Image (cartoon, rainbow, N blue to C red):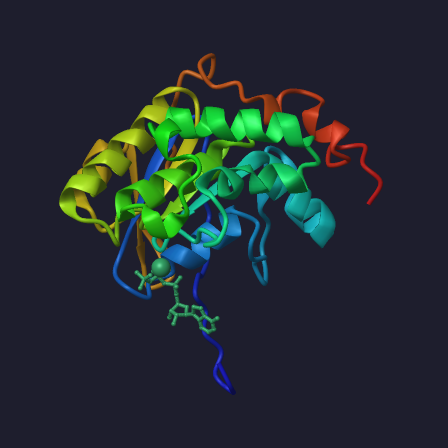
Length: 241
Ligand SMILES: Nc1ncnc2c1ncn2[C@@H]1O[C@H](COP(=O)(O)OP(=O)(O)OP(=O)(O)O)[C@@H](O)[C@H]1O
Ligand SMILES: [Mg+2]
């Protein structure tokens, strides 16, 4: 910031296993969103290493990072980030446009994702015609439509009333139990209570929860990270960098 250097994170060293359900908590300004942006390949750390599914992300150029992000990671934000003027279906289908999926399959998969979040009867609505909780469910459908291995949520219930928060919370837990790795920044004690692991960030440092919690990895075998899948995207060990 101007002449002063802000170290949003310092000396962070931790690992998230496939299939974990992690809550990130901590005071405002402690570095939670910065950490999530690095995990989600939206920001690069100024120093240190980040391995995603064994791939050193520092060796990937921006195009390859974008491909990996598109195929393997879904994002959910506090403010939904839906595009108005586009239907719920079009919003949900949009990551598949970047993934190069043909139109007919895009519509089928987007409709299927909207069904999973209980909004099959709202597909053709504009986001402005939906309640806050419904908007966040559309955003969750958009996050899972690419069948990602990992979903990152930054205060997903922060803008919702208590009833809608509960619905969104239950939906995320359900998706985790069906095989997603889930990382949620939250101020909601209910979410933190349910997560198997709570990572506490304070002043740019991981103050607690640095150790991962073992999971039964036979349940979690996402297509996106199957052996050879990263190679097929040009991201594996043998990739030309
Ligand atoms: N683009 C930026 N330029 C400069 N400083 C930044 C930038 N983004 C974040 N920071 C600083 O980095 C630190 C961590 O910010 P971050 O957004 O990660 O916090 P947070 O824990 O998510 O907070 P909140 O709970 O309020 O969302 C803060 O001191 C913040 O002011
Ligand atoms: Mg934040």
